[in-house]
Amino acid sequence: MAFQLPFTSSAANLKEGAFFSPGDECLNAILHSIRSAKHSLHLCVFTISDDRITAALLETFRKGITIQLVTDNEKLFDKGSDIRALAQAGLTIRVDNTQNHMHHKFAIIDSLWVLTGSYNWTRSAALYNHENVLITDDKPVVAAYSKEFTRLWQEMQPFV
Image (cartoon, rainbow, N blue to C red; front, side):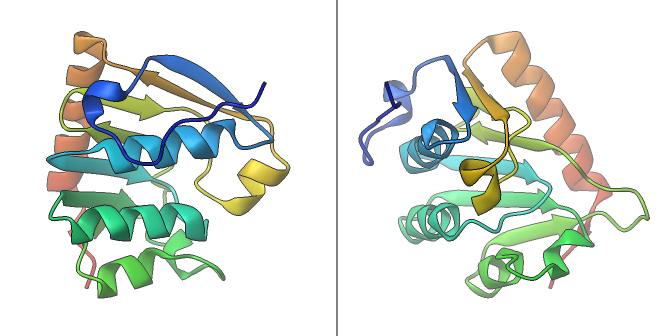
């Protein structure tokens, strides 16, 4: 059975779980998590090229939710990348300034939940790839991801 969640909710409605692609399970988990944020989203993703995810981020940002995004400095120039559009819309974005890739794929929702996994935030991940997303509110896990996000945020360069 396909994973389905309402598109409007609160972070209190998030549920721990594991989701898999191809198919819409991972995408729906990401969309639900983004739209569930009430205060903040801290995103650390290799790239974003799925317009459905970009639309959810913009919708959430326009509601006044703080969004900070760390991404790879090379992937943001790929054909189809939505990173520059997100920056133009006003999201605060930082990029690595190295030859190495910032290859993480995780989100911290309201400092209470972590969404992570191999799932690239791309259309092909939903259509073709065998990938996964895990959502948890395990406090030590959330703390570890929050620490890593803070470290990367301080280390990375602002994208303007």
